Length: 123
Image 1 (cartoon, rainbow, N blue to C red):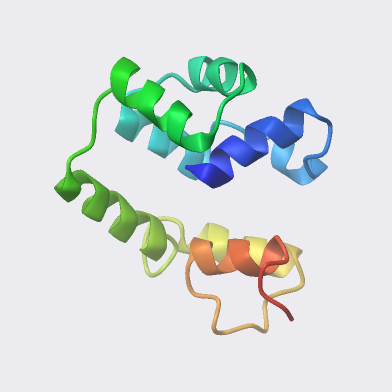
Image 2 (cartoon, rainbow, N blue to C red):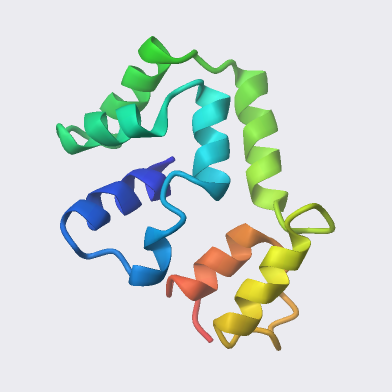
């Protein structure tokens, strides 16, 4: 959720990598919006109005649906394993190749890929 809000803010301030533009509101972000039952355009508008991530999440709970502890456990399990032997595995391999990370066998999920691709983990 914070990563999605960060991309919204960075896009608005013209500080988001160009290769992210086409997928805004799609992919994992789109799935999260569906999970929260929030329209991405409405979330984008609310995010740009300001506030901290927790305020925006509270808005999502009020305008979409609140998440239970079980919902959060399911989402976190899904998000952290996405790309590992599933419907996104081919996309992960393509992204690794495009980013020069194909030789990094330790990258087995999209979450791990994002850590390397966005510079939070070193090469």
